[in-house]
Length: 304
Image (cartoon, rainbow, N blue to C red; front, side, top):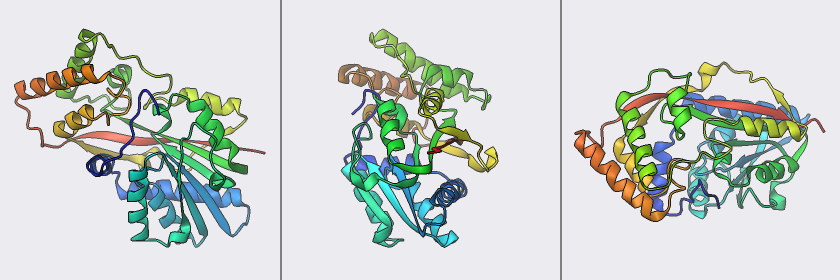
């Protein structure tokens, strides 16, 4: 699928994905409200709003969108697009425990390829931390925009936190000047090991913490960026981490841009070195530490 990505296709990985990517209800509610209000605006009085979740995973954002639609009293369809059957299966299980099946359309598809007919005529398409793992993210954005109704919206949402996947973002992130010293040393050791293995980190053009290339590309497509009607504080929280989770995800290529591009041999060698480093520091693998995190939405309007 992509040099910097991976597909979660076993239940253990999906369970860990759910836990590590959990976001507070208040933040999820804000995202759900944002998506639905834009969809209602784009629908121009239509009785049904259609929303596409591009890279839906297990539904951590699809569910709040459905909750917001119910709260606002509008009929809705959430078109959940993902390449992982296991992820979509988990999403369906969670959805049916709370919502009517009629409101969910599951689509297994690669965003980089033309999307099937079920994805057409959506009022809002949103994506969270997905496009940075795609080799052909421009083609993926093309496909998403093509399926919008005239007057529809695209929301690109990136996550910014202290546990950055790129050296520059981690070292120079001005949003969070309080960098955990131990984690900084861990990341520096990781990059030293990559260099020693002959596979120094080469950041992709579109990064987890930097969506500027995509923002520029949306302008090239003729979409106009819109202001966000919620304060930045509505998207902020403290995110838990453990070194056990970090090491597990690294070994299993689940850190997206952080190490998933390594060859199997280099990843195994570096994984062992990281484990020994943590052991030498006498770090409790299961002790949680919290770092500030926030979602940053970019909204684009398709005028015609």
